[in-house]
Length: 119
Image 1: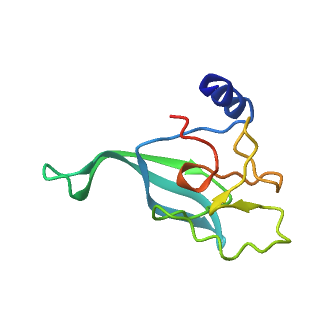
Image 2 (image 1 turned 180 degrees about the vertical axis):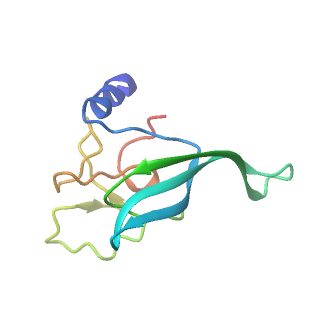
């Protein structure tokens, strides 16, 4: 199923960029235009403590929207029962073939979706 899901995402133009983190939001005329991202080479130090290591490698992604997802538990309290984005047991419900929610064009992933870990 992993290859099928990856193929579905790629067909939709979705890229999974693992080991990356935000560096700077780029704006033009007061609107989001891009996101500078950096490569994370490690998340823990020798003792196992959280201590992200960032390389000098940077990239700029042209975007028109940024959704911040920080932490290991999603705060979905802003979604009510009338929302097209559904929540089940604290996780965002997504299509099992692609990580799209009940709202067209809105996707969820990582620790927030209800799919098993695919990678």
